[in-house]
Amino acid sequence: MILLQLVLLLGFMVCGMLAEPVGKSAGALAMMAGLLGAAAMGAHSAASKLLLSHLAPTSMMTGNVTQLVIDTVDRLRGTADAATHARCAKFFWPVRAFALGCGGGAFAFHAVGFVALIVPAAILCVHLWLPEPQGQAQAA
Image (cartoon, rainbow, N blue to C red; front, side, top):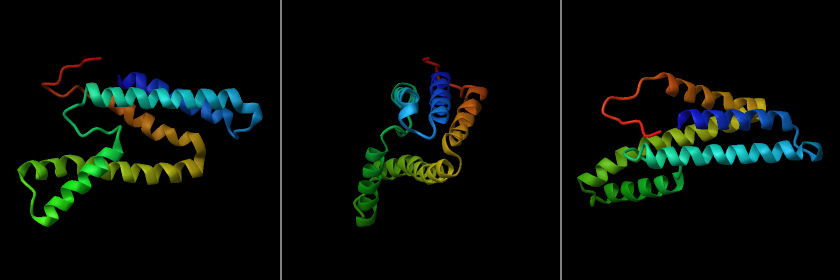
């Protein structure tokens, strides 16, 4: 599944680079870039839902932020139970990483364009290289 995400992401990056600057002459490449980007997000969403279901989902961050705010308000009001504390810890780090990634990605895209996608592609390569954690069955 990680390899599929990597291939789609690299295709998105290459088509996006070839379509820059996006104009009438780059219409087909821009369309292909968009389709490959959407397919990469779909592969990520499927991996998050099917293979990493024990972790906070990283493909629906709106829901994660909403849950984190609800749990934080419950903690501040003093009405949080043990499950609320555990859920807060589970959602905090993915939301923080997402926010930092959004900011970093925006600045990187502004600086170098689609080449900025080399960073998430490199992260996927590292994940391919790492051994599978013990006790986790590979479903893909």
